[in-house]
Length: 424
Image (cartoon, rainbow, N blue to C red; front, side):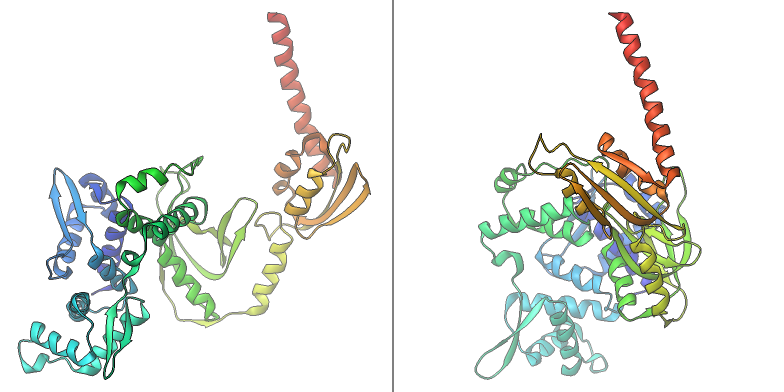
């Protein structure tokens, strides 16, 4: 199967999964760009579907595409996503899964069944060595496992979710649900949550869905796990590749953006809870959840370790993710009224949030923070959040900037108070 066709099919299946099987025709056309592209993808999926009683089906009903998934499809999707299947092998993998759903079989038994069901002549005969390669792929993907009896090595499908008790399914659902909402969203975690919902009855799901309330300020885009895993594999091999990335626009009215970069490392900004891809080129950093698609466009070459270490040292001294601005020392004095509480929560917060900093305790009511950072504008919102409990001593430019902001605030609120008094 051509790579572009496989990517389109994966996009479609992933979209259907995440939308719980209900998608309007208009939304799918918008996703694929045209009705022709959508219908072409549907035809390809129909061609590769399993030839069994429980085969996945896609049909048009009341202007909605209904996608009926079962455990066979769940296994088959995993194989398809692995990207290891050629067009001529698709039905062979499908049949192996179908055979193993009914019984535990040896290599020879699987080979005989494949030849009986798929081979029309001697030229298309499948040998046991080829079948063994298919089996090894399925084992590596985690779909089947070995089982030994007295004489033969047989293979069986792993039972997966249907072997778990309801109590364990509920615990697993709550665990996956929490991290898919509060952590780094990836496609697979949402699919697992969807499969768990299928395994539990509606009454149990309704009862546990209200245990945790998630309140997001804005919708969070689901990260494409395949993109992340692909980039990680490049970084692990200590090789650099020139990649062409397609980025989602920052604003809805803007078009998709394509850039060429050399990936160097992933970086997590704990202040804003964002993942960045640090790159070499005109663009130095990219928000991971903006990456829509990627493709490798040149051959590999060795990573310059010294260059990466130099960038890491700069980033460690940055409050957020800044490496171009000059280093500056920031000195802030913090105040705490110990008569109101025995625990100095201001000191605890500063220790937790100000990494790579020096703290000098003056007395039980005050302490001084000294740290090296870049681009002082990055740290202003953090200092401002302490209000009158923090006073910038150095640099003078940051101190004057904050004084100006607080003076403007005072002027604004004085006018509001004056108007209120006049009304009274």
